[in-house]
Structures are given as C-alpha cells and as structure tokens.
Image (tube, rainbow, N blue to C red; front, side, top):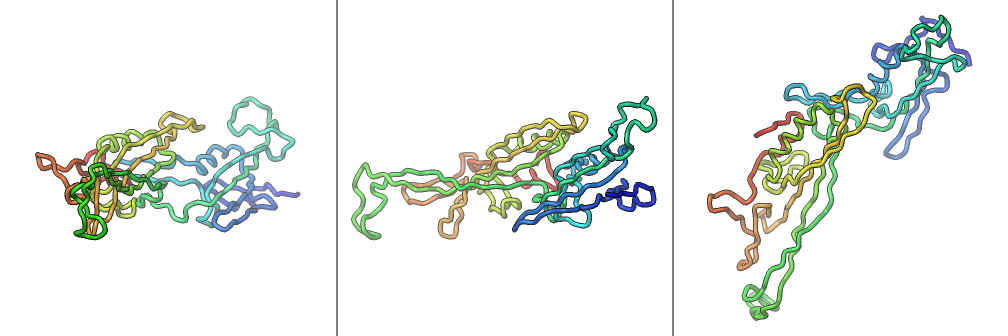
Amino acid sequence: MSINISSSTWRLRAGIIPYKLMEGFPKGGIEEEAGGVEEKYIIHSKNLQAFIALSFPLGINLDEENILLTPNRRYPGSNSFVTHRLSWEPFPSNLPADPYGIDLGAPTGTYTPFITVTISYVTGKQKEDENDPLTLLEISADTAGEFLMYGLRGKAHWGKPGGDPVKEAQLPATKLIPETQWNVRWPKVNRSFLNTIIAAMRSRIGLVNSKPMTVLFNAPAETVLFAGFSYQEELTWRDGIENTPATVDMKFLERHVKQGKEVVTHNHLFREEIGKFVKIFMPNGDPPFAKTDLNNLFPPNIKVDD
C-alpha cells in the first residue's frame, strides 16, 4: 500500500481538521432498519484531541432558558450515521506516536507525526432539532391496570335492566381501570444542566397535566400524573465534573378511560350508587390532584416553576 503524505493531498476536512482516507475505506453494512459504516483516516497526531472533541461533543447544554444540542459527528455526506466509537494507532506502525505531547524532549524523528483513526458509525436520527423534544428524549410505555372492587347489592339487576335486583350482601364486583406507565428518558445530560431539570421535576411531583401533553401523543388534561424520577451519573473521559454525563428518567402514570363520551382522569372517583366515575372536588373546591403544565418539563424551554 502506497500513501502520499505530502501537504498537497490533504483535501478532505473534518471541521477544520485535514485528513486522508485510507485505501479500502469506507466500508459498511445495512440491515432492514439499522446499519453501520467504518472509516479509517490518516490525521496529524497533534489533531487527535480536536478530532475526539468534534466526534463526541458535550451533547445537551443549557444557554439561559434554551436547550442547545451539539450532536456527535456524522458520517460525511449522510445524516443516517453518527459516530459511535473511535480508535487510533501510529502511522507508520514501526514508530511510536505521542498525540498528547507527553515526551517534549524527545529527539527529532522519535515519534511519527501521523496517526490513523478508525471511526465506527451507527444508525442515528435523521434529523436532530433542539426545538423538537423527541430529538433529546427517549420515550417508552407499558400497560398497567388498577383493580377496583365495589358492592352490587341494591345497585344492579340480574338478567336485564330492571330485572331482579341484586340482594346478596356478599357479592362484590371487580372493575379494571386501565393505566399506562410512561418513562421519558434524558440520555447523557450535561452535568451542569442536571440541577435545572431536577428543580423543574421537584416542583411538579404528584401533579397532573393541565394541558394536553405533546410528547405523550397529546394525552388530554388531567389524565397524566407525574409520579417521580430517577437519575444516574456516569464516569467519563471528559475533563471537569461539569461534563460528567447523567441519565434522567421521568415517570408518568396515565389514566385514560372512556365512559361514554367522557374521559375518566385522575380526578375522577367511582361512585358506587350510580356505578359511574364522577369528578370529585375537595371542600375548598380543589380537585384531589392539583394541575400544572407538565409540558414545561421538556424542550425547547424548561421552566423550574410555573
């Protein structure tokens, strides 16, 4: 394999970093819904740190009240693939490399001025827009249910409407109230942004949505209860504690039951004497679950307090 390292051949750029594509690359494979690409570049050893920062930026940041997204580097010419892994080695391989400038007093010619970097790309989102919550969030859901037991004596009839009334004292009935457990995840949030998200969540725990929730497919008002959150922090190669990534999971419980044309929400209770769910209010006129705009937990603007 013959490669010309002269300065006139460095025509390709990653940002402002010049590189040469190695012979035999790129290569890749595609499955039905996923794929991957691998490239191998020759770059100047001194540019390694800048290339890593370009490939794996900080991700999610907060600038005043706005979310800013700096996504991983894309495969050149395509939005389909994003950088997943990067490795490097000296070029040529018979010399050591010193990309971090550790051995400053080494004689000329001790280290090769070039390295090869191998970049693995995997399938990513076609579009990344910091104004779109779905760019930054991962959403999943599971079906759940709550069993309600109630007595039928004097409230129901056998056989047909208006038939023999139920007289048995020990004849309970069960009713399943379907619910949806939603999990909304912020993956790899910049550590400096974590306090903002946690403060916004703390002020809304135990409240229900006052408006339809966009990220949960426009779930109607009062059907979604913010049940709590969890988070975990990760160690990282990036410098500074403010750059330590964290993962935050928001947990929601949706009650959406159709009763004729009415939607049963968290602020409905089952009234046995009429066999229906009815909205209920406390002596001061408030519903059991206070309401707030839960959309303010998500991009493009996150509000700590309503």
